[in-house]
Length: 471
Image 1 (cartoon, rainbow, N blue to C red):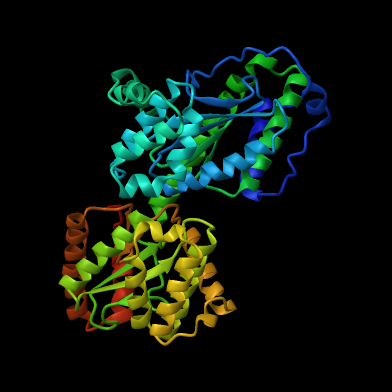
Image 2 (cartoon, rainbow, N blue to C red):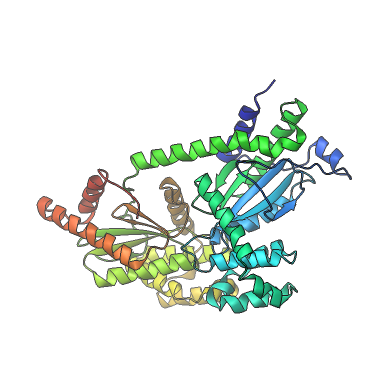
């Protein structure tokens, strides 16, 4: 007889780490059970309770995806589209999707949007509101959120007056607080995160990752029920008991590894072909910005770094790395165009980046119109637009994204100040303090060792490895 824990954990880990493609085709048993059948009342998990969270899919599914999300998080929006595709490919009865709220403090409207989704749920339209909040993220960010929410409620044919009253409901706020408390118990502080029968898949992954995990975990649970290792109604609760502790152990082990060997990150700051702002030799502080065009938090971080550099132009050097936050064709083209401009020279790349950063948020949804503007700007800078789609431009983007993976950059913006990681959109006062503290140390090192430029940067990394930390 097989060990249920071993079977389930092995199935999920193979899905996550090997990423093998899976057709998601129904098994013979699924095909046979797709006809009308009695719905089994499933036992909830005490470790990862579903409670009354919004759910779609079969209530007695073999596999349960618990998604922690934030309606202002661009990666959560990307994941929502991916899971739409994944769920559409599931045969009847295999999977269900559950949503739980984790609005991040760095997203000022996230809590309001979470409450809005629950207010729509009061009228039976949570998932419709869920989809529109992600689809219309730019409008909600740029416009008056209350007015935009009223417009969306009207589009969904909700009772708008009731909807707006519910936005102030303590009961709805309490639902979100319960989800946040659960996330805290799980040690979860980043979104998106998906628990598949208790096994954690962090971030927004490719569809194949979820397809493989759902298929493998579904087959494992079916096999365990057939072998008498668990009861059919206990599939979710039993799986979570097996998988969730393993996920938490893996998270703790990863955090321990990162804490042990990642006091500083050795970001290559002197490779050609990237936008650069500042003096290569005189700078005391090297700032690496892993950036996505069209992402407001990342663009705002760019603005703050430009402001910091302008205040200390001889001390601060900023290098931009490409990490597009989605597979959007226009976004990819703009990043390749930036790579082409940067190949001309670092200053040209920086001028082009500054222009791209000043584009209004809605420009990124304009498709051909934006592409024409990008082409015109390239020509103005003396760059042939045909250089955009060269293999060299694509190689630069691929290299930066591989580097981001090596450095465990899982969200944007992520910045490194003389190798010290800054996660998210930090306040400019905190950035300024970190830059000033690092500059003071670098100035002493430069004077004592009589070094500058790349040699000084490497010396700062060597010194930083004795300490570490995260802003």
